[in-house]
Amino acid sequence: MQISQLRAFCAVAETGSVTGAARILNKVPSSITVRIRQLEEDLDRILFLRERKRMSLSPAGRQLLEHAQRILDLADGTRALMRDEGISGPLVVGALDVVLVDYMPLLIGRMRQRHRGMTLNVRHQASEDLVAHVADGSLDIALTEGPVRSKALRSKVAFVDEMLLVTDPGHPDIGGPGDLQCAELYGFRHDCSFRFRMDRWLAAGGRGDMPVIEIESYHTMLACVSAGMGAAWMLRSILKTLPGHHQVKTHSLSEAGRTEIHFVWRDGHLSPNAALLMEAAATM
Image 1 (cartoon, rainbow, N blue to C red):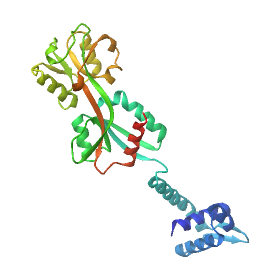
Image 2 (cartoon, rainbow, N blue to C red; image 1 turned 90 degrees about the vertical axis):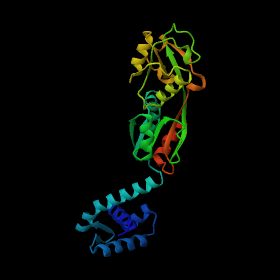
Image 3 (cartoon, rainbow, N blue to C red; image 1 turned 180 degrees about the vertical axis):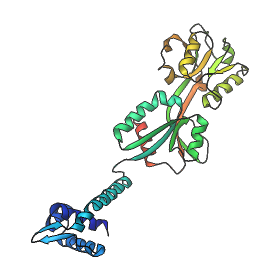
């Protein structure tokens, strides 16, 4: 039983004649006749009742028709998927929380407009977890701080942001950790890449002993800063989305504040759907 035989069978069932089937399949009538005969021989069943120029389904033909249509739908869908004629299937994306606030909603909107058949699953994880889950294959692609240095992984810049030091409005200008006049800093837990950078910045400026209070909410961080209780590291893209961002003072960290968010995937295992995600990002 071949796909071409089932296609000829369904076309004859639809049109009621070999001539009609040949017309819609763009074949000569003799080739349709041969395929129907081969299919009947293969199944050892009479599939059509032949009455003059009209062909109607036999009981066995009626039984076959629904199954044949399902097989053809599956075959056509598989062919379309392999040729990228129709985009479908899952895409599992991991992302830092900072990516989910401003960048990812725009990217998801772009993907939904272009590829409605794709199923997107977006997971929020810390930097170390994102890299580990890309490496073990549980994530198709991730958006995390980069570049990622691993022989097993590849990365590409998605966008560039800037890390700022945020203080209350009355704080003097800050050129380095030694200029801090507050009692504490606010940041995320130790497995966050931004926390690693903040700790290194403090240590390089001789302020490694400054208390860092772990707060898992940018809104809470900003509220504490606004109240004059301390300072925080915060991405510019995040700060602009927070209520009250005009009520604090920002300080540039120069090169120490440059932040690259990268797409990260396993070397040699970039899925077609992940490639489409990066393609959509390039047009933003």
